[in-house]
Image 1 (tube, rainbow, N blue to C red):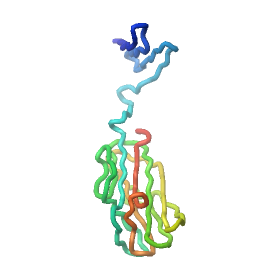
Image 2 (tube, helix red, strand yellow):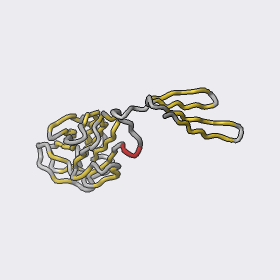
Image 3 (cartoon, rainbow, N blue to C red):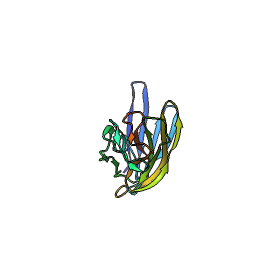
Image 4 (cartoon, rainbow, N blue to C red):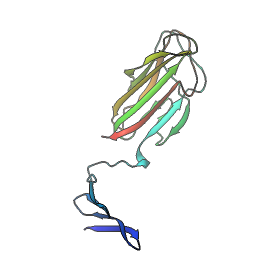
Length: 179
């Protein structure tokens, strides 16, 4: 069954949306026609309501073991659009490719390393930059299966403290493309 939705003014139709059983939508405007294909029942179409995104940070200094990789306790969420972040862990419920970014700051000049972990193992190691203090940043595009995969942030320093600063000890992520 085909149907058409039209919207316009008293002088004519400004846009018409027509669909049929093939899965194609035709967008008709006064300037011409454009056709887009919407995935069929086995495909995935992402809309803003189901695109997971989160941002979390360490709100106060964290005491850690020196010279060891330690999980960063990201205790404060800036946002979590799909409730996939809890207990310092991002566990997406939609299979797809996620852009993950992270940062780690230590209180004095040293060489920290932030590492994005997937399922308990190192996945992407950060680099460090010297400004007034030392920071490490990492970014990676990672596939998550939407059921059992999870992402965490770990850090390494020869000191005993990770700095709790929202803009510098954090992890964030967003679904870029569903699988």
